[in-house]
Length: 277
Image (cartoon, rainbow, N blue to C red; front, side, top):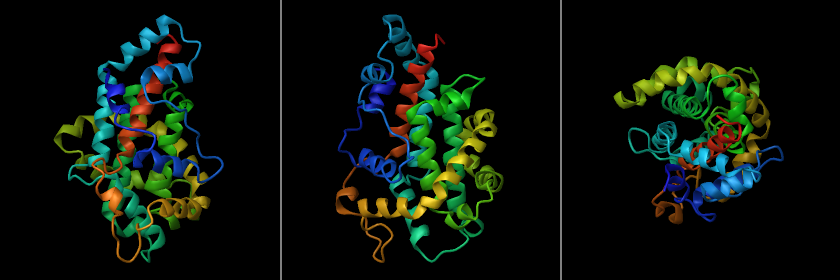
C-alpha cells in the first residue's frame, strides 16, 4: 500500500473529520467542492478518467516517492503539534475567539498567532514538496483539495480567531501573521522541523497573496461559517466548554490536516502524471 492510500484509509465518509469538512465546505456557496474518492486509484478514475496505463503507473511512482512521504509527515505534525494538541482544540479555539469576549487577538494572543503561522508554514512545505517549481501555486490551487486546504486555513486559522482584523479588510493579514509570528512558528517545529521551515520559504512568498485573497472572500461570511460549525460541535465555545462525548472518545481527534493533506498529495501525483512530469 502506498503512503497516500495508507493515509486515505484512515478516513471513512461518516468520520467526524470528513463530516466537519463537509459542514465547512457547505457553509457558503463559493466554498470549494470536493471530488468523491476514498482510494488513490479511485481518485485517478474520478479526477482523470482518460488516464492511460502509463499515466496510472507514473502516478503510483510519484505516490511512493519521498516527497509525498515528507508532505504527509508534515500534515500529521500539524494535527498533533509538538505537545499533542490536536486539531479539535484548534476548531474549539477558533470558535471561542469568534463567539467570546476576547478582542484584538492578533496583538494579545501569541499562542494563537504562532499556531496559525505554523499551519501556513506547514502548508507551504507541503506545496514545496508536492509541486515542482514554476507555476507551483497555480498547480496547487488547480487541485480541488488544494483549494479546500487553503479555504480551511483561511476560515479556521485566520477569519474566525482574528475576525476583527479580517473584517477590517487590510488585505495583508496573513502577511502580518507571518511577519509577527513566523519565527515562533518555525521554532515550534523543533529540531526535526528546522530544515522543513527553511524549505517552506521557497513556496511561502508565492503562497501568501493567494491565501490573502481567500481570507478576504471568507471574512464577511465568518458568522455563517462559525454558526454552521458550532451546530455540528454544539458544545464548543459554550460556558461549560465541554467536549462532545462522541468526539471525546474519537481517537483521531479530528486530524483535518492529515486528511486534506493526503488528498492534496493524491491530486498532485495525478496532476503531475497527467502532465508527463
